[in-house]
Image (cartoon, rainbow, N blue to C red; front, side):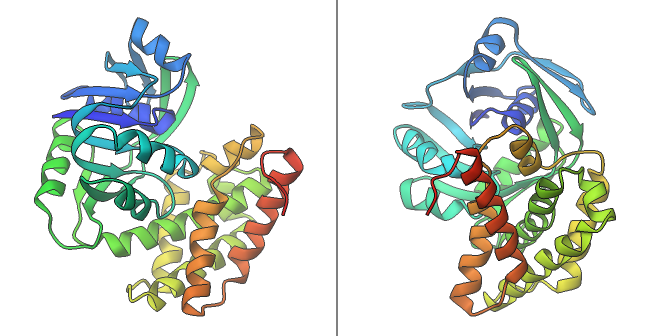
Length: 301
């Protein structure tokens, strides 16, 4: 399968690199990382060890592939969609945080699949990423049910040795993923702690309540996700990635813009739509946004 990975940072490089073990892969990212991959190939260390030579570009326009995998930060989704709209693809699959798929659907003609990825990835240096934990990739139809394209994509991931599930319940899994992100990202970023330390300490109370709020929003949206199920998912991911720092924690540590809008904005906007209280998610969001304004990576107001 020909695969284009748009947004080859840590996760995109890891997923694209693993796919390159069995498929023709093009990474689209930024220099100097892409330049080093072109010159010396991509090195993956950690829980997975691989040396591969995918194609590496900084321009993702006017490309053609069987599958485009979107792994940009959620706030770059519209830019990714504009670039992908100039190319030709059979399917597009998002492995991003937040509910980005609807924005891709609005901008693109190909079928858009929903996806999640629980592999841990950390950027080490140009040309090298570290797999901090083996998880799984889940793909499926955005609206749920079976989909031949999802089956084909799942088979391609499995051929490359990636733990993969093709799921018929992606609407529920998307909300569960949102609950996990809401439970771990903000509290860990505010406390500057690893995932395990966040859930194991005083921040765990806020983490679990944020997950419960997302579960209540899901049920108001007609998706069956119990409070206990959402909390269990947060606890499971935190345990599996105990030593890792969340992407939002890494962003705050580096003084970068976060995905607060994609995660907590998605939760609170839907809470407003369905009349569900979400005070914990709102409080976390306001604190992260205040930090962004203070750092100059977000406009005030």
